[in-house]
Length: 124
Image (cartoon, rainbow, N blue to C red; front, side, top):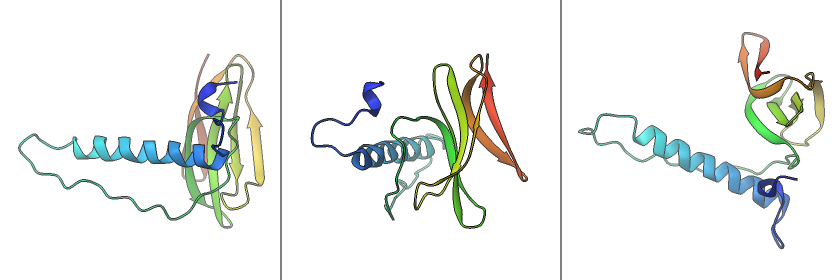
């Protein structure tokens, strides 16, 4: 198992997932604040945590976004070497609505939505 997805003693899976989300938010704030010209003053981005949701910590997230489809729905490209999938699930309950596995010789690298279709970025 990937040590980055294994909770340490006294740390819950939800705390680990929340830490990852916070790390992504810090990275996004840094990236967005450093995107302007050096002579411009850019206000730092501010984030407010509005909730914590269940997440499968055995899933190595390659990309995800939340979309509206009969209520909120997470579209996530998830995988480990030789086992990638696109999953659709409720962010509130964690209940899976759809999982599509890709062949073992294809590795997932992310997911995007265009119109009503989902696309998975892959490599062989």
